[in-house]
Image 1 (cartoon, rainbow, N blue to C red):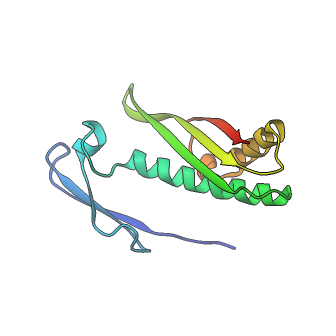
Image 2: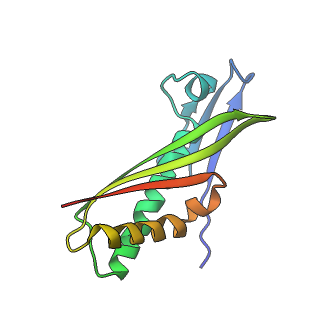
Length: 143
């Protein structure tokens, strides 16, 4: 099976004074604004690193749900936060690190088994495989 999804971006102006919009074919984002200030100056607004962080959290959590099911476990609740690090490097900027933090309530799981299953999910998640940065994970199993 091959699935294709589309997203688009438009931009007008220079790098610092320009403005852009992003959209997804699903309509979840439709002409959503982004720009230099939201990416590099900490101002409110969308930026690629936030989108990657959200996509990675989504992908990892779904992959873990599948892997837990294969292990005959079901999470009552999973909350994943992803931190993407953008750094200035020689020749420009690069995403140098990604850190996932998962908190989950999964009845029947012990910490050792849970960590093994979360490591599998991190390795199997298509977004993890797309990124070249070091990806780390903290997996917290709630009682």
